[in-house]
Length: 499
Image 1 (cartoon, rainbow, N blue to C red):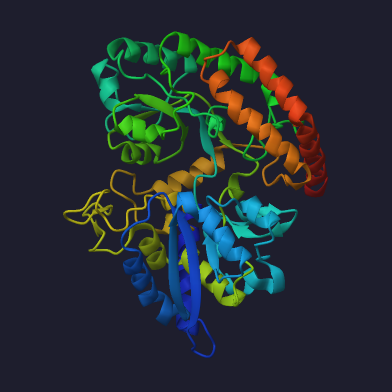
Image 2 (cartoon, rainbow, N blue to C red):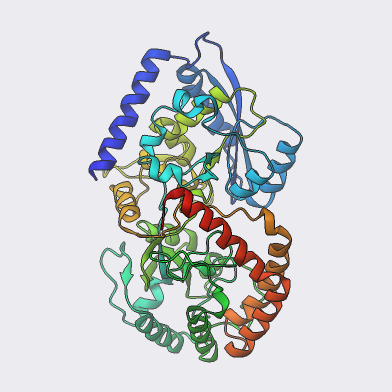
């Protein structure tokens, strides 16, 4: 908590000093036109309202006139890539949905420390992020191309979200208020699933996420987004292993096979790609895999349009790429890197800017409650608010913004403590460059996505499924990828001074 208070005070002081000393943020008093791009799950209706509200502060305070471009998740990666390839102006953007390493490999990103850019124009950003340890986690081969978001870099592994109404119906004793994660063993959770299945036989008991979010369950380090070469004991060992021949993987698919045969998993689970939160909201399923963290109860309850209870069976863990999942970046298409970094500083250190970007306009989209929380303005909810993107975690610095009703007011402090206390991978800060084995990754991914749903959801005998998966993935180049990961990790470890 002390680190949080110091960080906030420092950010506010630095912002105040900057405003007092520089006014417009430009020595000549000129206003610079900049473009900020980001993706959201659904495009909100009040993009222009938010742009205008941001400019009411950015123009007099920082000398910036901002154009805000918001795209939906389905089009953001393609459209942003086309814009950058064509050299169209984007000065600051989120790498979420596009891919930080993908953007780096395509040559789209500026070195944020070139000509002391971050040092001279980004005062307070590193402090707002808690120091260099997290910031350094976004380096690619020593170069800083992006700034992490202030978010839960750790993740509670082996976590499950369950509709509270179903738990109440079977007499499970829910805590009051039901804001905290319930830590239990996987055996105890399986007993709960059995009771739920008996009580509600016509509703799918659980829908594990496959294959994109398989990592939610395991306390291992995938060394990137895909489990093609992993650290099975990441807190102690930098040996890259074949995940699919490990006992950990075998035990997992044996468990899901048992769940399938008990009737917990729906017959179409392997082919249905409907988001699990949408299925829960529709009453089609009762539970699913998620990642534990402070605030997860409110987050999942909002996504599922009903109260949810969170169970966790594993540890809190911080993987190698935790700080580099979706940094904010300055693309090569900016014509004014200095003012682009000035905009970055505003996003990370100015509470007014952060609140508008995350929550909208006070009195229009939200109101401050007597408790200090914020809630929808009268007559609004998630369906008709013009700016309820519900993506505080993806914005630069949620820690200096308001707290939504239902979360604890000290949520930021809880998240900092969560990150600080999590088990950290020895490889934290290592970012795998897939370019040398890109062809193998494409081939192995194709096999992985074809076979894993059937195997991982229990529709195929574990022994037979693993044998086919391993055979076909090896033929596609799995061992080549594993060897390349080990080579890069060994080089990184020597450079980082890690034995």
